[in-house]
Image (cartoon, rainbow, N blue to C red; front, side, top):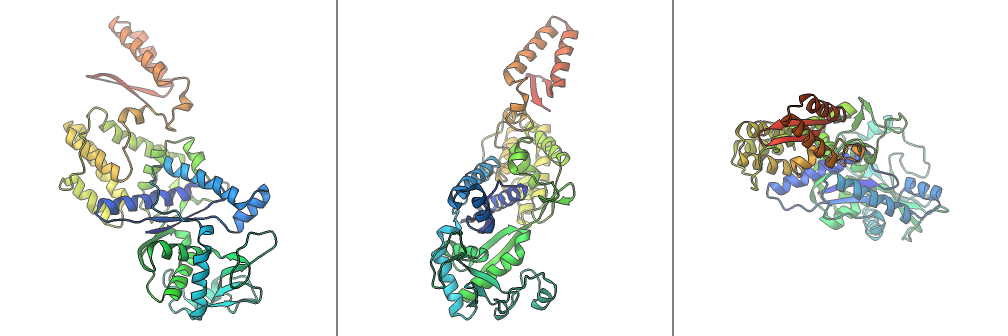
Length: 437
C-alpha cells in the first residue's frame, strides 16, 4: 500500500489527520485479516511552497522540512498512528525519477519543451482520465489551464522543471533542474513496492490531477497495470463549510489537541466512513468524547480479560462483516457500543476483554479506563491544574468522612465544588470513583 503523504512546510491540519488515521486503520485491518502488509507513505520535501517558505525564513529547504517532518511524526504518534514501513522523501529519489522520465521519453510520451522543462504528452497516453472519469475533450474545454506556449498541448504536465535562479537543483540529462510533483510518487512507489502493487491511497483532492498523472506516468513507463485498488478519503469540512485558510476555518492538529484528547480526535474521524465528508465542529468533538467515555466506562468496573479477539463471537463476526465492507468503521464502532452494553449488563471479564481487543484493531481503548476518564478533555489534565488528581482524591476522602459523621451538608458541598470544576463523582459498591466531565 502506498499513500500520498504530506508536503512539509507547515504544521499538519485536520485533513492530514484524516489521511493519517484512515490509512493506519486500513493497514491494521488488513493485518488483522491475515495479510502481510508493506506500507509506504511519502514525504514531499521539495516543491514551490517549500522553496518559498524557506526563502522567507532565510533557511535551507532541508532545515525547514526536517523541522516539520519531526512535527508531523509527533502529531501522528499522538493520534495513535503507527509508523509506515517506508517513509520515502522526494529528494532522496531523484535518480529514480530521472530514470523514469528517461523511459517515458524513450516510449515517446515525454518531450523537452523550449523553456528547458520536460513535459508528459497527455494525448499520447490512451485512457487518460479513466480514474477521475474525465475525458480529454471535457478537460480541454472546461479545465482552467494556464496558457503555456512551450507545451505541445495545454493538458501536458511537467515531469522535470528547468533550474531557476535561487532554487535548489539537480543535474539531469536535460540540464539542471528539479522534479515535478507528480513524478515523485510514481518513482518512489515503484522503487519500494514494484511496478504493480495493490493499494494506492490519498485524499479526495488528489484523484485529479495527481493520481491521474501517476497512472499515466507509471503505466506509460512500465507498459503494465499500475495499481489494483484506489482509495480516496473525503474532505474535512468545518461547520459544513470546506476547511480553508481563506475562510478562516483552518485548524492544525496541534490546535485541536489543545482542546481535545487525541484518542477523541481519532474516534471522531473513525465515526464517519472514510469516503464521506467529515464535518468538524466543537459539538461533534464533544459528542465523540461523550461516546468514548461510554465505552471506557464499560471497562471501569470490569477488569478485562487479556485475550486476543475471538472471531467466532457474535459481535466480532459483525465487526468483521462491517470492516470487510469497504472499511465501514461507523458500523464497526456501533458494534463496540452494543458490546459495551453487554459488558454493563453481564459484568463479564471475557466480554470486556473482547471489547478492548476489537477496539484495539481500530487503535482505540488502549488506556486504562481510570487514565482516560480522569485525563480531562484535552488528555493531559493541564487545563485542570486547580484540581489535580491528588486534590480530588483528598476531597473525596473528606466527603466520605463527612458522610460518616452524618454531616451531609458538607458532603453535598464537596460534591458541588467538584461538579463546578467539571469533576463527576460516581458512588458504587467498591467506593467512589471520579472522572472529568
